Amino acid sequence: MASSSVTTCCSCVSSSGSSSGQLSGRTPRYRSWKRRGQPRTGGLLASTAPLRGRAQMELVVRPFGYRATADFWGVADAPALAARLHAVVGGTPAYRRQFLGDDVPGSLEEFDDWICRTVLSPFSPLFREARYLPAEEADIRDTALYHSVLAAVAQGNTTRGGIAGYIGRKSVDISHPLRVLEDSHLLAREADIFRAGKSQYRITEPLINFYEAVMRPAWARLESGQAAEVWGQSAERFAAQVAGPHFEAVCREYMLGPGRSLLGSTLGEVGCGVVTDPAARRQIQVDVAVAEPGSGGRKPAVHLLGEAKWGTIMGLSHLERLARARELLAGRGMDTGQCALACFSAAGFSDALRGEAARGGDGVLLIGVDELYGEAVPAPQR
Image (tube, rainbow, N blue to C red):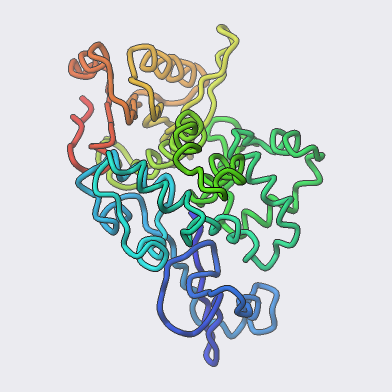
């Protein structure tokens, strides 16, 4: 996610904003203390700046993780609500206190009304925040181009070629915008864990992703006060373009933290990737993967393959697809002897899949929102 950076030397403090000392936790990078209209000093100690050699400390202030965010907003006991809240506002503390005055949805049933009176209301400070975030980055000048790149990613065009095609540019023409957005921590380039040289982009600031997917296409209607109507017509778009991709990222974050205890081996690299099935002429998307590169005489190993679904009840077909991916990776010479198969779902699991997991013969893990937020612990692999 986006982060804020503070670098100090023996005689000055370089940060993105005032020296008021009150940490707001706002994003993106170099903005934790920033207020609009104030000059930037972050370049004073940049890598090529004369004062770089005087730097004494570089402190990166990151937004809260999804579990800490649930605690901060007071919704840790309601995982389904916490997951939706984090998909919209992320882990920026200032959005609750300074922007919304502690206006927090009390239950999942109140979420729709809450989002209409806050994020989607033209009278709310959060309404235009996502439009301002890119503009406040020093290296972003043509904001229309950068918003087009972000919109392309939000619409599911996550490769360089897909982004270029969406905005009508050549791939080489978007190299600079992509690099600037990466440096600003508004985009993250995630390498394919199974295919060298392949990667995809992901928007790291949830509020920007929500704006590009839900708000921007209906901006005029939202400005005229039609929040309830727009939100009522955005359920499918929210699930597919906002909550779904965000849920996948949260599942990977889970494996980097609490989920480590589910593996009977070292953690390795956590990511996502595609496994090609030549016989079936298809590609199997693996949303959560834990792999370890080979070293010396040891083969590269895969410790976990997982699929994440936001609004789908997962069944045996999802498990079979993961098992096929494991078989294909074993055929490519990877060690899959200790590879668990994980189904992550915010909607639940079929009885047949639960029965298969209960038998425990294939290292099957079922992880829902309760497990992600620590309300329950899935059975360990056997």
